[in-house]
Image 1 (cartoon, rainbow, N blue to C red):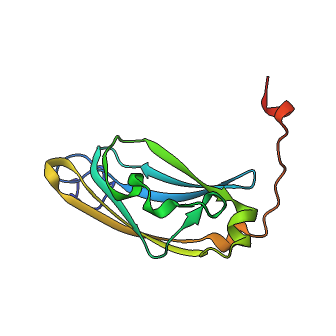
Image 2: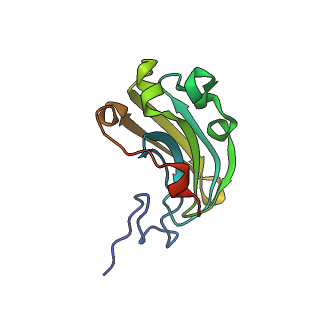
Length: 142
């Protein structure tokens, strides 16, 4: 006999589906840092919001990325979809002594308005010492 589970992402939940499962990921690519809001669940997420433990300032110190409308209230995020926001170059971010421990509190609603929430902690310090190769314009064009 199958067991029912209400865990997020469980295929055997009462609805028969796992529901939305929204995460905030940090992506390091070629010396660039991105924040990615991603629905890894199998249902749409609505009214998605992220609050950060710290102000996260990027773009060379010109913008508080943590205050972008994307993180305040995203009306709809389809299953399997991701929205990336450029944070900064790693060199600039660390040179300006931005926070390396970031806690993201993520809230959203699933089917029938059921609230979902999770907390994710990121340690950006792990990217400080990583080397990378900058791609020239000639390598990326073409």
